[in-house]
Length: 232
Image (tube, rainbow, N blue to C red; front, side):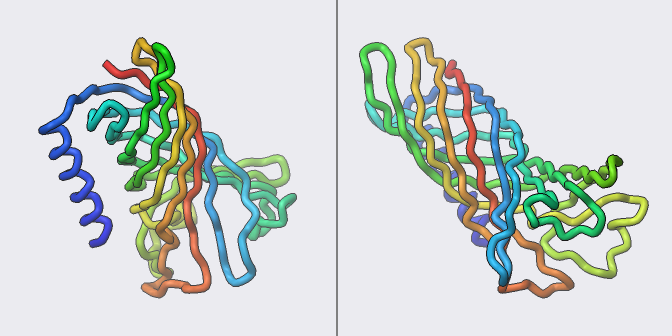
């Protein structure tokens, strides 16, 4: 319910701003490095970053000469890896396993732009909301590999027969995620821009098991990346 309220509030903010401000549409794409912060009673599990991508459309809403609101709608891939070398892998007789997940994501950043002759530098921050669409996993052991699909769930039931076995489908995390972005970049006079960004999930997206949540553990997303964009 809280996520729905946040999403509706952000959407209304965009509509109100567009009604009274100058708007420029654009496209953005780039690469990510992402991971999961996996915590239990023993502390954080050591994981490795996974490369990914993001792409989609943006809207730059001019609030003043220096402040802009930039909502975007993106398709983003995230994930993480575990291996025995890091002492993190708990799956029996598996040397390495990689998870790749896909989200539709709505970040809304407030940008501050500073003129530098014909070009501008900018800084920004804001919230994001994301929804998991699916994904896949690949495990390696003894020189062989096997792969399957991921499924986002709020609750995993031990009685669910659709997981494991020949389906090779495994439960992943809760589908909804919410967090914060920060970014810094450089904008050229021809409306082409580049920026670095960081992202931290604030929600615990760990599934409940048979309707029971483990208060001793948590799962949160973290990501960094680089983007190139163009405004029309």
